[in-house]
Image (cartoon, rainbow, N blue to C red; front, side, top):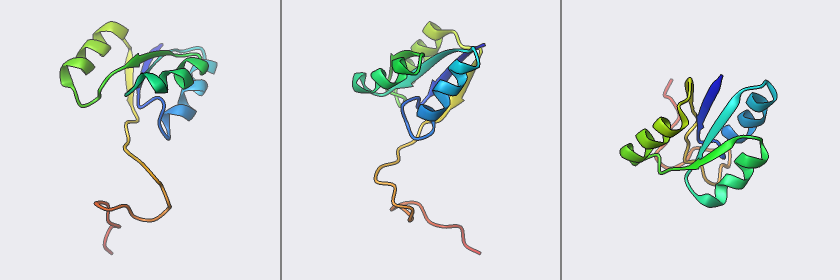
Length: 93
């Protein structure tokens, strides 16, 4: 199966890529910058650099990759400390 992983170099995606490749899938990983592509390629996946907030660029990347399925693992996590980040509040009880 051809699988596209959005957020391939992120917190979840970087662990998912090698598992998908090991299971014999053809994997395309999306990264937000060229600096992030090395990790994707080392996992055995094809890397595509795209700004996930640019609708036309995402459509072009999907058209180019022609995946059977897209896995959405896009995040914007920085400095994860285990606590709540500004803008994210715990659910009230």
